[in-house]
Length: 140
Picture 1: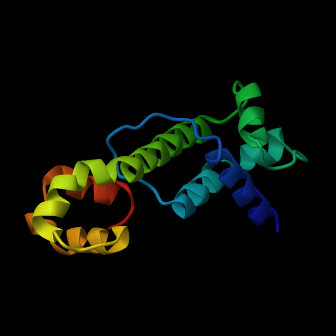
Picture 2: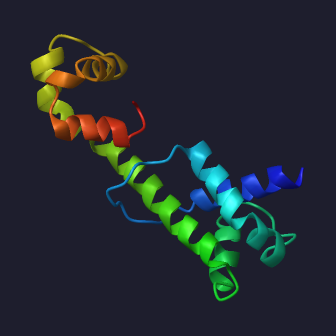
């Protein structure tokens, strides 16, 4: 039960939407929650005990008590937020980045999911930029 609460707290941290994109392998939300639960669980349990989840309360608690937060938690939190921001950016910009490849390699295919499947299948014919966007978005 306690581990579930820590994972929920980690998920609440992710909902803050903070961070800036950097080149790195992006994490799935599930992997991000697991990483934060492992790295920050003790800090959340000790420093934010009894705090309700949601609305950035856990993140706010860790920020307010940053002098007491372990370095491992700080490092993990920064990396996770950057990775999630990169994933969200790739998902938002994929259509623009892959527009030419979609026309060239998947012309005539209708529907976003079908076009994405086509681009993923024709990976060798698709530009490096488009392939990277698909990978960073977590769709491959």
